[in-house]
Length: 200
Image (cartoon, rainbow, N blue to C red):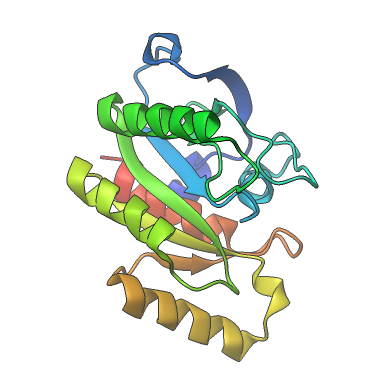
């Protein structure tokens, strides 16, 4: 496909569809879905707003506010599913178990899921929490891409070092640096997922 055509058909805005917890409440459609995961303070909502060129995802000063699966229509090109963040210590044991059931159910049963975007603060190292998400994606057979958010916090050389570090730790080639503040990197991520996960 011609690159100019790809840019033209890529989504430019997002429409919120609905929130859900149980599989029976997931939206019904025939589009591919891309899930987005990350720590509670990784910058997932800011990244979604970067993709949409709009403040459709609420950015909270308090990490861990998202409790549901939130589905967004990317201009009828695909659906983005924002999953509740992990690593929020203030949640109770019951909440953590509910979160785990909700996430594992979605990732296991959603037939039109095409890939998972894992958002990380670029200043953090790869940890066991991220490794669990990677192993889960491998087990379920869908691809994983890593988005390193808040890239404006580092110099250009530091940013390149951070990307190389995550690539080495994960063995993944799909690692991207983004900045919601500078509105940078989102188009590269979207082009990648469109070309590799969506258009087929």
